[in-house]
Image (cartoon, rainbow over all chains, first blue to last red; front, side, top):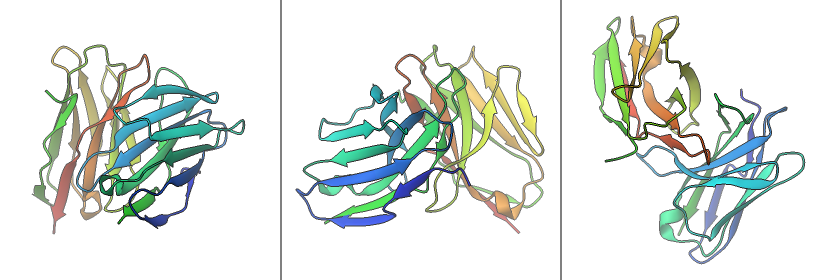
Length: 113
Length: 110
């Protein structure tokens, strides 16, 4: 196991609602990245947090936002949920560096009805 | 052109066969490369990093060709347990944008 944990494991929401997903990074890791994986697709990079600051962002609208806490854990918030937000949300932790290797948590499966 | 391209497969191979996957990337400034394995409805797990000199881990060999901008994964003596989706990952550096390919599905048949 990677030591990266995510909660909740599954979630059902309705369109327009807001959701917060949580991730605890592996001990010693200072960077957290979030990904969205739709069925049959590879994970899509949402954003990365390093030292509590956003350190990179993919092509996701501002209603996707995040936080990193002093203990390096992180939250992903999604406002005004849309049906297309239904996906597996993956969190990965790493140590910032050139050959940065990411280790994934088990993911949160979100269904928007 | 997609930033990272993979053949989604599926590749159906008999046990004991050798199979190879390629992955092309568009950003010539990309800094690091990885292969991940993903089982159905599970998270991706790191299989191996890919180094310029090529690297091997047991039955798995990864190669990087910067001139042609592709990485490859070779699996020798395929096992049933190798059945999974293999994801190519490219780290562009800079603003740390990490891009995954769509994944190549491998099914090893008895």
